[in-house]
Image 1 (spheres, rainbow, N blue to C red):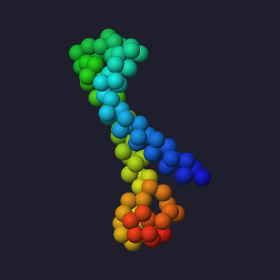
Image 2: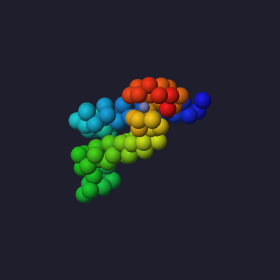
Image 3: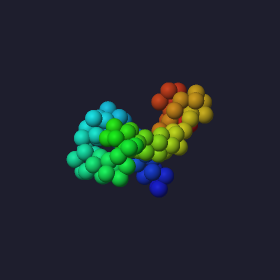
Image 4: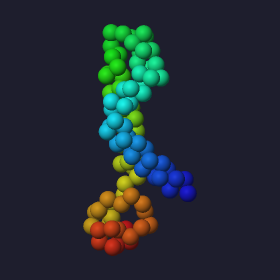
Length: 97
Ligand SMILES: [Zn+2]
């Protein structure tokens, strides 16, 4: 059961990461709004610009999402298509991978 829950969660994380990538400007605005950019500039004005901080935050979110994604995907034993859930029929060849 935990495995199934983890995989559902991983898909949500990946979708969230994609949404974040599509809205980097919005993320930057959000960081500005919660004061993270100001805080970073206060702590380390020379290195942490708002843009750099945004990139770092997005990368920190994307790396674990990518790892979880790679872990969640399994391969069909017949045609090698990517399968998101074990125990389902392969969408490519109909085999029970
Ligand atoms: Zn297949």
